[in-house]
Length: 521
Ligand SMILES: Cc1cc2nc3c(=O)[nH]c(=O)nc-3n(C[C@H](O)[C@H](O)[C@H](O)COP(=O)(O)OP(=O)(O)OC[C@H]3O[C@@H](n4cnc5c(N)ncnc54)[C@H](O)[C@@H]3O)c2cc1C
Image (tube, rainbow, N blue to C red; front, side, top):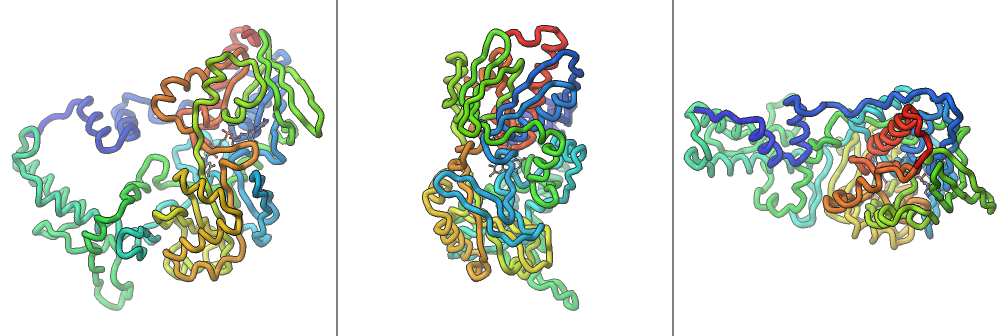
């Protein structure tokens, strides 16, 4: 008799195979959680004069400015950099890269297709608020190709370092694992009684999972690609890759990369570059944004907040009823302030990521001759990834992402090099995937985010114990000063998290205004 799973069993099982995201999804499917993000706060129009200072023109700051300005708040945004957008940065002909020690100017050709998203590049289909803003702000979107089974997987540990197609790597691995499973599990080993029908069903599931033959052997699959696509002849399967070589691979994570919550199709990108979103906000609130105004001092008072900033060498102090602040906490810790001890300790407690990216203008779209139209090749070398543009297909040139490192050691290694040395290293490593890589490179840009001025890091690295200790402390307002940014959201490293933090703060301000205790700490 089949065992009937309770909801609790089911959630536990889902967690074991898919982590907390799977539990969340499963719980939502069972109707135990709302399936969508919180609705955008419906804030009331303001009747009294309320001055709001927003510190930092990151996506969260721009969201807050947009929402509060249209409800009648008197908004001013102070931004330290010469540009708005923060980590949302697209580089194209003439763009400045404000990296401390290594300032660069982008030398890509002046061509709308030749751009490089140095920060965010992709938007999952469930990042509902960001997508809503794109619609509202007239930001045209296009599908983004994230996972491409025709791209390459390269690991020095397997196949003598020769790259293999992702579809072969993934499906041959799956086939061999399925064969192993079919051969090793026995009905009696399973916990709980199983009917013969259930047992047969399970075996059939395993067979289809790996595309095994009737004897449960993995003999190859068209999922791994055909030996030839000459359709005047009968299909010939590729010979499966050697299982012992596949076993040497050390990066199984790509098995599920394209299936994770934030990386699975359908992904999107703004046509012409991610900073089209910043442009969209700036069309609405650009007149409120004061660039090159670096905040130097914050004093939270019993009523309101005083902020001192530096502009053109002058110090200016201004006061506000509310402050929403997306200055990265590791920099905010160095701004003079009178925050409570616990809060200020929290500012220094959260480490930041060290992402590093390179974009190369290629004089020929050589990857298209390899049957690659967008997506990612993976390697375990320092560069970690090569991305191919899915826009501008069949045009002459394209900009390739030639390095995108999550590994902090690789990020630091690149960061220590000068931009030409970084490019040389990326080309050397990329040549293991594309042998003639170097001959196509015309010029490039490099960005070490932990060295970028006014940023000095990427997403907040919320380890569970740090989260437990500091998240609420930092998310809670200090008087009428609110910390915002993806750094105080449940989704750091994503623009949707930055937007959620702004919504959280403005909903609180709205509630205070409705209660009439507006500016009292
Ligand atoms: C390499 C990389 C890849 C990413 N990929 C994606 C992706 O694919 N999709 C996605 O949605 N998200 C992605 N993200 C994350 C996304 O960029 C962030 O979540 C989002 O942009 C953060 O916005 P924010 O409002 O928190 O502020 P930030 O972008 O952190 O902006 C903070 C602002 O504060 C300003 N500032 C600093 N000091 C001062 C001061 N003293 N005075 C005044 N202003 C100051 C800074 O100049 C900056 O403008 C990526 C980020 C990086 C770096």
